[in-house]
Amino acid sequence: MSKVVGTILIILLVIILVEGKRELKFFKITRYSLKVPKFRLLDTDKKIVLLADLHNKVYGEHNDKLFRAIRKEKPDLILIAGDMLVGREKSDFQEALSFIAKLPPLCPVYYSLGNHEQRLKEASWEHGGETYYDYKNALQESGIHFLENQTEDVMLDKLCVRISGLELPMDTYEKFKKQRVTPEDISRCIQHAEKDKFNILLAHNPVFFPAYKEWGADLTLSGHLHGGIIRIPGLGGLITPQAVLFPAYSGEMTLEGEQALIVSRGLGTHTINLRFCNNAEVVVINMQPFDEE
Image (cartoon, rainbow, N blue to C red; front, side, top):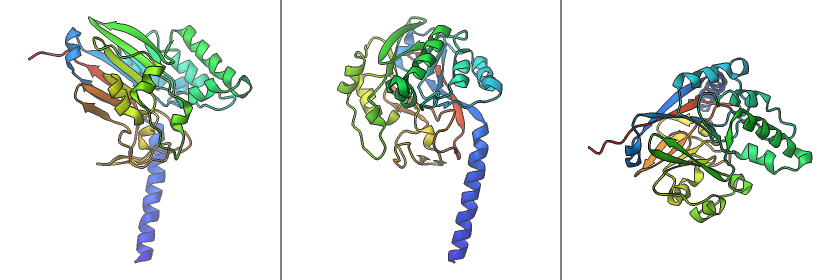
């Protein structure tokens, strides 16, 4: 009996490894629709593309496949939720940079940092700090709007959309350590949400969604968890980068009242170079005008 069980486990492991490597070659378009009372100020549907966790991954020469897929969507906004490069000393960010720099002619692009960009940013000049500012300056010259605990407003028809990029302390990403973030912590980083605007919060780590929601985010956009590496039907993602099993939010849309969280499963991988039942994705969010009826 034990031999049978062992054989089955080996077969399952082989399947996971083979399929997990195969899935690394592709990405899909994941679509969500959102219709909330604040959208009564929209005249027509608006489209947001969410990108996260590319980690220097390349789809086609110079990410041409990825760029063409985004261009085809004709987005009104492109929002980046961090970790587009790998945060290590002397990181080669050229592939990520050349891809992102092509996006501004399509529509406004807003970029909030993930832990990898933040790690480079906070490093000393001797240990990668210069790398981050080279990367940032090049992207700003191409027209990218960086939001580092900053906020910008953009008009979609008559709707004022406030986009905020949240940068929490690096210790909130530590492994094997349960962290707590409060709405007050968020308010110390960025100004308060304004109720008469539609507040989009770019927050790389979705774990603190209850705090984001209480702070006043109408729509929180996150990544970081890579979909939980392995996704189990009916249960969701298996594990987080902080080694937490079965996270509450790992790669889906969660709607609580009129507030939503959308977590991208990401476009690349890091540390664990594997995906199982967990395709990389470009997230497309359709904002639909709200009909009083």
